[in-house]
Length: 163
Image: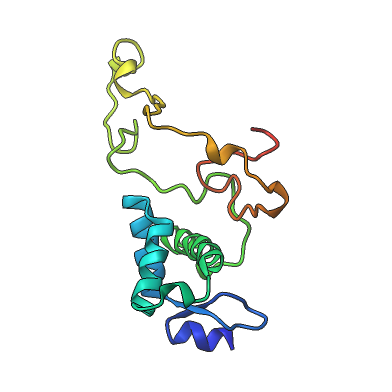
């Protein structure tokens, strides 16, 4: 049944007894809106308002299901973008991190000269920065046993134990 739903462009909130589905377009729009505008709960409030303009408070609360399905959808997108969608193999560490064409990568998109090793090595060094709006509120989840790690150490983040 879930395969039929996927063929129709619907992502079920449950694979055992699906009662709620989300369209692929909605999931793409939700992820884009959350990424660009940080509007997770506001987006869901908007959906409830669209569903029932007069009585949005009577629309069943499916926000938890939307968040879970959006995380699964994003993981599937990462697999697709990195050409893992049809392969049955284990991922190596960092294999889902997207390659940045804009970043200078010596030997890949920057030609190295003989003087690179001695005088201009600092030109192509990597530096990690954090802006002033960084918040660590997600570092201390309220219910750690409820957290599900979908792509631990397959993207940019390290394993929880090593961290």
